[in-house]
Image (cartoon, rainbow, N blue to C red; front, side, top):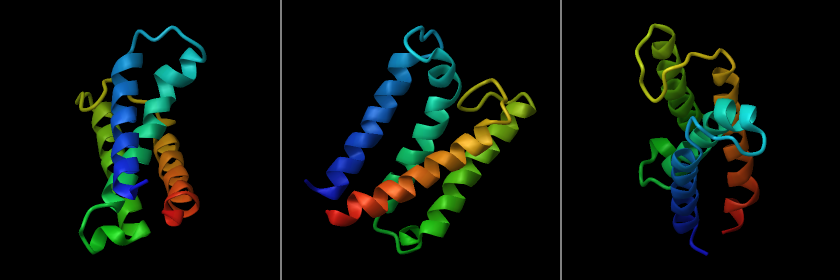
Length: 116
């Protein structure tokens, strides 16, 4: 399977999951899904998408990690100040969830995508 195709599929799947679960999700593990799953999966997908871009700077794990975490941190900090960008509720745990998503993406890229 093509690496770019897999990454695009993952990103589309994360996007679909975001819209399917929504704030009214009442299925299994509602606290995890409503509170943190998207905060893990969006940085995961964003990191992977940036990794298939044809930009030399984005081939660096560190640059992508900083860019993705910076985006998540700015978004969350704006929520703290009442600016509803990509969400409305500030949660201090969203910062480590973003870092977790990036870390999982690094591992996924090195273990799975490196074999493609």
